[in-house]
Image 1 (cartoon, rainbow, N blue to C red):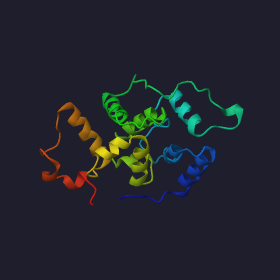
Image 2 (spheres, helix red, strand yellow):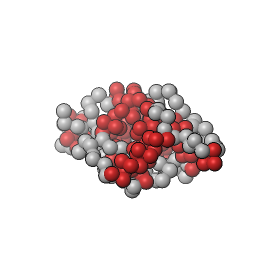
Image 3 (cartoon, rainbow, N blue to C red):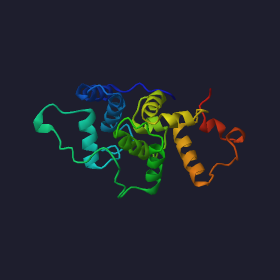
Length: 193
């Protein structure tokens, strides 16, 4: 499963969000996530796993409301993250992603947290994020975390790759085999290729 045909209601919400955007690269993928979340087609919360203030700041950054009555106060800068009330797993995944950030924009902090939160879902990472294909996820990661994409040189499934990287960092191996090529679950972790 590498792409979905999204229902018309999700496509309509996507069009709505894109109509508010400035056309930034990340806006395309955030609009897909937002449209999917609004229609219950993602594991992410209504705020994409972010605090309310951080969510409002992200929305204002990528989808600025033109009517002054509806503009939100940019209450929280898109820099360092508040980890209060966040699980250790999400913090570790966020920090892992941030180690690979492109440093183009402070929104990479928010994107790292969003991706880390979606890792808690039970489906493919792109699907749990509310994206429309693995290609969407690859493009989002390539733009914001390019060295992470380079590190996944054997095309491992993203969620499995991220958790494997956590294991390698902590010297704890959860895999059944000492190397991937000899593992009986190889086809579960890697995209045929």
